[in-house]
Length: 329
Image (cartoon, rainbow, N blue to C red):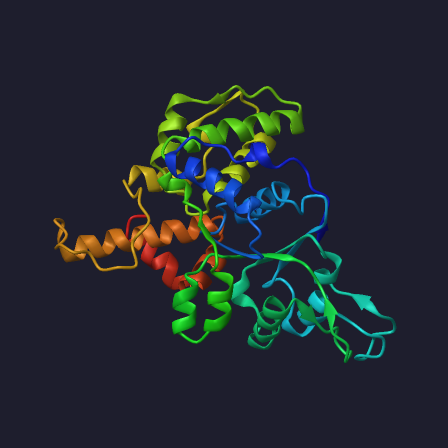
């Protein structure tokens, strides 16, 4: 979790205006004294990369960058991981342990998936943000710390506040400066630039000489909505490097789910809002198209695993297979 910082700056690839504006905002925010930054973005858009870029461009760059995934550590352990504990604080605490926040003193703490933090810990984090002091588990002594907190979420936190899943006071404390990462599907030709970047990267890793995407593959990449964003793109290309021998990325190398989605013309991710006008194709076909997009995106996000996809859609495996057949998928 305490990381050695590599040179991440070159990995923010793309010339789309939204990315150029984001780079400028990162530079400005990095130099500011603000201690809290909130990053919004869908899964796979690069929130961790942006957090590292902010750290590297800041006056805290020579100190530690600590990466904590709030969803990956059980709530019962997260408090000790964050704040540390004293000897004898609980069964198994045979010696004092410094927490990750203390380890990052004068540096940066990145709290990924902040929405998943337990409500009790949300209170303690708010207190730390307000006072710059904390207590190790089992201690009665306050310890001071100077840390910049960067939090990230793939959910709209204000909606989480309204539903009672996230503290309103902590939300406003974190929301001093916020950055919004655009999904890959909204970045135009950046998907081709990202592909070139990853092809060069994996040419070096696997000692290959892949020249790039075939023209037909470029058109597919431009039309596919990339629900898993940059992470999905990188994982796809690395898989092709491992399994294929051609020196060009061809359509035949792509998973059926991507080809199906593009052939069906399902190149947008459905909005959570109702359409403002009546669909031209009528209610039945519009509903069917909506279901095709949802299933295709769920398959993509779960790497074509039917069991995981069915669980994500909250239906049985049998029901999912039946619906896919019914929809011609």
